[in-house]
Image (cartoon, rainbow, N blue to C red; front, side, top):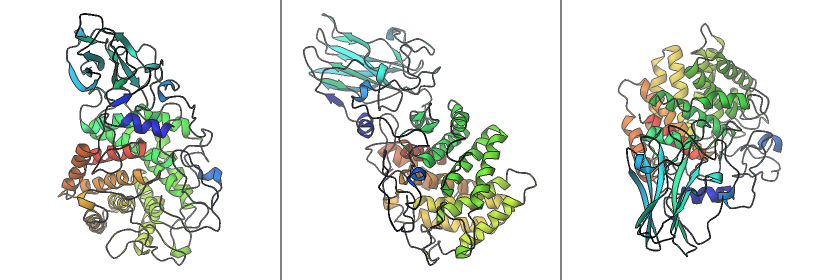
Amino acid sequence: MLRAALLASLMVSTTVLAVPPVSATPAAAPAAAQPAADCDYYCDDRDPALPLSARRSPHRPGTGTPSATGAPPSTAGTPPGAAAVICNRYCDARDPALAPADRLAQTVAVGGRQISLRFNDTDAMGWAVVSAAQPGDEVWLDRSFDAGVSWGTGSRLGNTAAPAGFGTWRTMMFNVDDWAGLGVGLLRACGRPAGSSTIACTSWYRTTWNAGERRTAAATALMQRYNLGTGLFDTTGWWNSANALTAVIDNIRVTGMNSYRYAVARTYDLNRTAWQGDFINDYNDDVAWWGLAWLAAYDLTGDSRYLNTARAGANHVHRFWDSVCGGGIWWSSSKNYKNAIANSLYVQLNAALHNRIPGDSTYLQRARTGWTWFLNSKMINGANLVNDGLNAGCANNNLTPWSYNQGVPLAALVELHRATGDASLLTKARTLADASTGSSFLNPGGILFDDGGGGDVPSFKGVYVRALAALNRALPDRPYTSYLRRQADTAHARDRSSADSYDQPWAGPFQRSDAARQHSAVDLMNAAS
């Protein structure tokens, strides 16, 4: 139900309803037996050797699956931050005649009438207009605080009927966002001709407030999916939320927009005791993703609790280093797979900790040892692409060279170079980056693409471009600037909805979005800055 609503609400095309108005990841080593699939928004394809309680990747323990009421999405429960009357700079129901600006977002037709959505970007408000109106024609606004999935009490705002003698009629102005309630919103205009059961609505749009350019617009669209109750991002999983938070933090760094800074402490406070505490669960890559998110938070805020949590995660992961295959850490607590992502993250996290802890030698030694093992593990193939991991015989398993497996080693080498000053590390990183940016497999038609679905894959490209940008900044000639800008320009032109949401294929076309797809787009816009 929720996935269907999400698809419908984010389509760029006009919505026409013939109903009366309403009132209100890479594969692991094979296991002997695969338990029944555990599905929420997507089926859980995590390590089958772990118990179901450890494999519920979409949500942290205790939150359960999303509820399905069976009701239309417009009658769903009120999202966090939605208020009956919202007051920002001005309160809801302000006269559009007072607007200092009037921007047309979209016009749709129904029964010979035109329904238009207009914005006052100065005051972050919008209103609906019906033109070629006949007496009794209705026009109103819908307002959503969850990326257009539902609109609850934001339905039929300012509903009004055109009187006789007026060819044009309009609603009052309403706020897009709820600043006091941390509601990040969208508006659409809807109308119904008199005597008809057909409703037409524009697509979802917002003002340019916190969305004045493509980097901030993408971040604002991501924050529409931030759940104030859980401190995670709806429509995606646990580790993806770590990357989404990292994308938001990076966006603050590159744009200077601090509006969503509250998400850092809120996510930490609401989730620190989940799983085993300190963002530790049975997957070492998950633990490392959260460790890196908290290092980004530490860099932003200087708050030592984030640094301490990252250290706790790194120390936990180190327990899974052993002599099997000559070294390396296991992917999960079931110890049945040594793979690229967990081990490259191990290097990055330990090197990054060293760079933030004066006098450290422990994390630096772990990072050095981790990189030496990774380099000699044979996971880097003859084309200088990184395959997914090792088979039971400790040889390259030749599984898909996902984009994030190419990216994390770049970020790891940048951190290790910062720690050691060893120029050969950047030379190796450049060799790997040249291979991945030049790969026709990874870049069909010149645009980065991971050929896979599920809940994990949509996050991969964001990880890649974030790491490539880190390497690009570390190299004096900035060799990957044009590549990153090509990706961003293409995605912005071909893969974007009216609400600045993005889909997985940056070459387009846009079909649907979720928080994993969206954080990858935020990472991309950050990287192309």
